[in-house]
Length: 314
Length: 253
Image 1 (cartoon, each protein chain N blue to C red):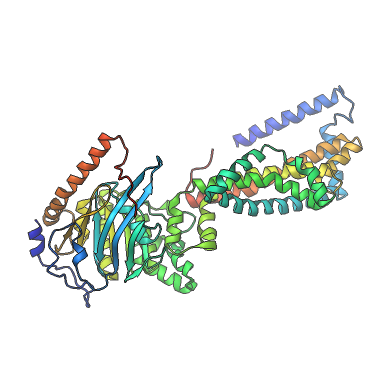
Image 2: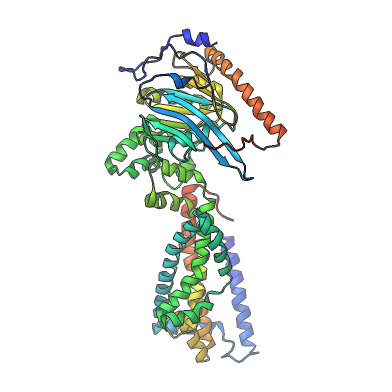
């Protein structure tokens, strides 16, 4: 499949100025392990270098969650991260967002190390994380309000982004009055309204029904095209990853390592039913299956006890 | 409609029973007054402004005392909830202190503040501070973590994070504790006022006792009940309804 993915030219609408630098040929269709380490790239938008994360479990054992993660994300790239549950893919997003700190290694944004949260990186949660005590409009304005943006400007931008997600009529609604898909769209508008360079999405569509998800895939692809943001999208759904991403990175089961890196050069707009998408997903899935089996093995053999790496600490 | 009818029947029966017992004259009228006597006492009390003044003084005190409790309790509760050391040490102390009736602080309050309004306020604060603190601590813990994450992610930190995110996010989990704190504050106030000549409702109640005027005593008791009930029904019920509308929570049973 990967040969197929390579030969199909990218035909999705390219903005006037290409945001994405041409892909170097040395990036193989499937690069295993820490292949990115050797790459000489211009400063990436987001760079993860040797990220390790370990913590003490409740039983006092040391658990290694992430093991020397190296990843470079180009400006404007749509990167999808897949992996079995428990591989630390959500944790990785929290690290990039600056909500937690890694045990060792560095998260770089534009070459500068990340220290704590910043509005240049906005995380969208699976459970949307909208504030139920605020209206839709107030939610979208929240980030700008924290920044001290004047009210008139805030409202103008809020309207702009609500139009972008087709929710202009719901300004005054409270969150509980919206459907799941609408909530996720508000979350996207709220994230975009703070004008981040990087959008971090943590399984944002996992709790939605299939039709809503399809629709939001289309909308997200369109918004990505219109706004030129860098997106790092975490999902356990391989098809979704291939349908959306320029690149799909597969993480191993505990401890999370980069197992493979699949460029996806299928033409856009794509759809989940696309045979090419299915075919590309197949290759990723084959590798993912090994990891899922490993995770199941651990669960069956040791109850629900996690795989322990004793003494690992950087 | 049906509900109103049930209310009317119930209270009419209660009044009837009361009148009947009073009319039977089992006890002398100054020990067991008629409803009519109580109504007259109420009317007279309002007429000569005694009750108006007492209500004003008492409400003012309870508002100040309770207000201080809420502010302190929120700070303390958040502190205890977000600091493991405080939680392990002060958490236990707070729970054990709650078994102490607030009026036990009265002797100390007298020594520290003298026979003054401040001594009364101190007792009121000690009465309600603990419930507010414990409620806040609990609310902070029950509050889904995602709100804090989302707030920090969107650039809120320090006081802004507390004021715009943590505080509103924990309100639904705190409101019952705030209500309980109010009830404690109100009771502590009346108790303290009964021990010290001080213009408040508690004092007016004691005055009735000193004059052997049970009609006046019962009239003031009714006032105390009514005021507590009104605050509960108007302020707290309103707050709960407001939160339910915003959050879309099912009405509490």
